Length: 187
Image (cartoon, rainbow, N blue to C red; front, top):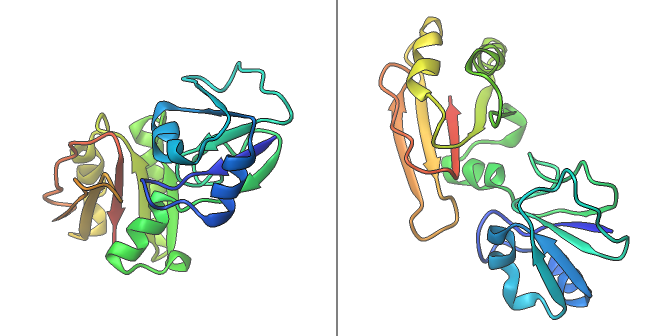
């Protein structure tokens, strides 16, 4: 099986990923992942909503939005073909060297765990890049981090799409989150 990163948005797929998708007899992926690469699929495809209980044939291709190893499907057994992640996009948009940052997966984590992780990152002088969705309570998090001073806080939504938004605020006055495709950055 091959787990292929299709990029965070249309147009961000690598040449290697295109070739592997074109060769595949069957492709599995979320609706969003399939939509990103539909033009390269020559075989059959199956849209799936849950990967945890799915039995996937060994010769199949599984699509992962962004990169499989950045909060993606890299936990599946098989060859990983990387993609361009929203983390790479946010670093390029905000001119952050990834070596100066720590990525925190905020999906399905309680607020106190995320706050502890962000606090540790800020304490060691790094940039916190937090992957979240629109249900994330950014105001609760930023109020809990007030001991770190009034740092810049960015909300980056729909990265790579035509409706991309990058909003700057601060820990004392954070921007609002309006999209499920969201990355929060604290500098």
